[in-house]
Length: 122
Image 1 (cartoon, rainbow, N blue to C red):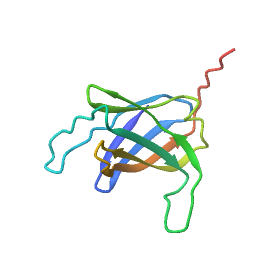
Image 2: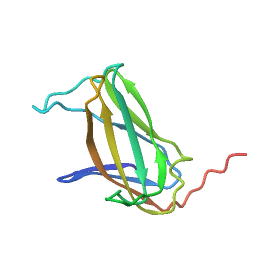
Image 3: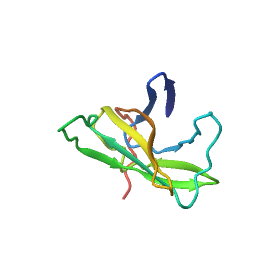
Image 4: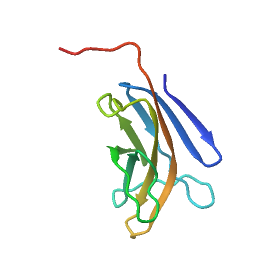
């Protein structure tokens, strides 16, 4: 079951290992109104084992697949991408606007829970 919990410091996504998630990543202007992503904008999502701090790197575990639909970025996590070990990972969504302005506008944790039912594909 997919659960998205809004928190004060970001967004927690809970996903069972091997499942699919389709997430709308709404962008808002500073005044809280919806921003419509244009063809000149680029939205990028990455998931890592830990946040990156000064002089530290972290293993990239998912390089997000984002498609803009009606001006809204939609991030799809495939079953192949969610076959990570159960645990907590860190993600963020960044938009680079056509003007060159860069903003990380969403961030949080991705919690992968253990699976019980396995779908074997022959």
